Length: 403
Image (cartoon, rainbow, N blue to C red):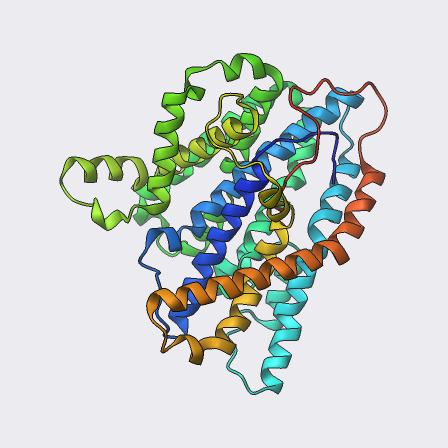
């Protein structure tokens, strides 16, 4: 669906890769829970949390850019319409998964006499999830197959105040982005260096750590720079071929290189630790993700090509992939555990991800066609109207939000 006529090429492909990394991480967690061969010790198969960081940066980038386009087009921002657009995009799948996870699957499991791990109290857990505080529920009671909803809750919490801030304090947008990043940096530094001061407040710190507002502010900063200074931005050296190879190499290493291989006193270990194992490492990682988003979507010299028909299709349904994947994995592993157990590690891994991946894509596609598309059509009712067409500095087409 088009929204405000804004399209960034290649981001659908990136979004799918991120969603599949999350799927693999949870697949390995579930294989471990069922005492099956698993690859939890392999970085590529345990990098889903890093991929979620990418989603946060991407969401902040796209939402902020759309708000800037709306202001350019209409000379204002309709907060009410913004909220309705987010409701129509996010809520249908969110509540479907919530009902499945808190009611349908527990009841079916009990009826079939299957073991079922439900850490959330029926009333308290359901209320927190229903009112978009799943990150608090996860902080209180832990993680199960509906745990991934925590990131959707964080995005909703961010959206709640972001549109009003952009409307009434747009002239201070740059200061807002930087301020949020600085505050979060101070929080991470403080909790890292003064751990004793937080004895007995672990729940509070755990909850505050889920508020990845700095990642979305980082994305917003990139959107602001691109919207106002695209031509000048794309001429910067960080988008040259050489820097692209360097930054892309750093991203690939973070997703693939096992940290135990370089956690030594040699030069490689020191460099790796300085980059990725410090309290400030989130800034580097989110900065690299923002660079990747800008480079893929807007740099005419990019060497990273993720724009094609297959990846666009998978990216368009990646919200469904993200939302349904744990349910599909749970069902698949329960049904196939006795089949997977005697297979070799390579064969069992291939069988699981071919079947689970295919079924997740199928479920996400059906959900998109039968459910999401109906709500997406309603979003047009709340699209920005009036004013002159926005002189957006990117080609027009549809946004690719993970929410």
